[in-house]
Amino acid sequence: MTLVPEGNVLKSKLWVSPTRAANLDGLSGEAVQAARARYDGIEVAIEAWDGSKHRPAKLLRMRADDARTLAAVLVQAADIADIQQGHNTP
Image (cartoon, rainbow, N blue to C red; front, side):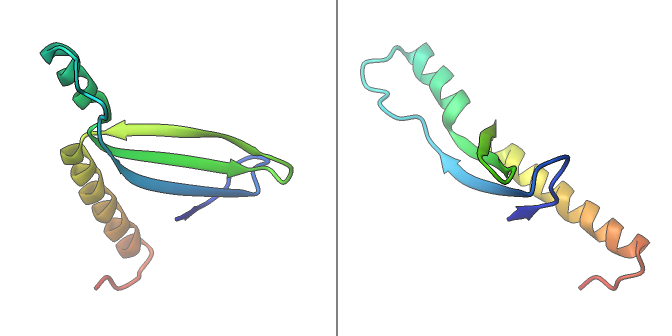
């Protein structure tokens, strides 16, 4: 997905990927829970290009249920923006 660039950034992209904790063998139950809490879910990466180089990607990680909530909030905000701008929503 292409984003609206900010500042001296010429191009920004957003990537979304499912994530999962790997290599949990040999870890304690507590360590497995910590790894799953950190890595199981969704990762959002924001990539920026300033014309000469890519900037380091910014990463956001969230649980799958939080990603679903974010998706619902984004749809609601887009619908409100369409209504305020006089566009018909499907």
